[in-house]
Length: 311
Image (cartoon, rainbow, N blue to C red):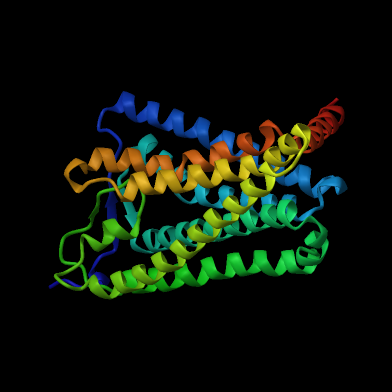
């Protein structure tokens, strides 16, 4: 039995061994990464600079953009570098750091989406109590709780995973280091300790999922009771972007982790991993800005100011 301390690097799964396709993969990921950086950075800057957007909804959206920037930056640059220079290796410390930061940011984003569903519930179902339940102090505390819970969740999982002895080599069947693939390298029965922690996290995640579903059930019931069509349209436009982001977040995870084992192959696992790690951070800014007039106005003003300064 060889202990994990013997390993000094892991080997990640390449998208392809053909040089032309490696360069194509690099170009595609570079385009997606730059789009995610641009979109999320514009939203962060617009919300920070426009005082009209200093509301709970946009405060949570700013935090979501920060998490999206962090999560895509944890996995994509390393994958691009691997394709550009045809290098599969990632150091032991680099792999552990990737697992920690991705799980930290990914978990915090799910908890933050739960808070955003609560924000929409209060705004639509209890509008008279909105200023009381979601004042500035409460919003900061809830956002800090989401970040903090994600941090401790990642710390617990990373510590457990990298304390397990590995006997099945050092080849990670994924384009980034993730816990399920590392557990496949563990010795017989050594992964059971981490599985118990995963079950606890899944229970917490399921609780958040139930809360989100119940919140939107109450929201749609309240919206359908609004007498005017214009009022219903405005209410739907307030909550549909968040619902779309939650749906994208959860559906890509479910496709990746709940697919039948009979159709699971390294190539298919790699494609599904792209769906939940790369696509949401790039698409979320587009979803939130598509039908949001306030955010669109703030972005136009920001771009106008930047263009004037460049001239």
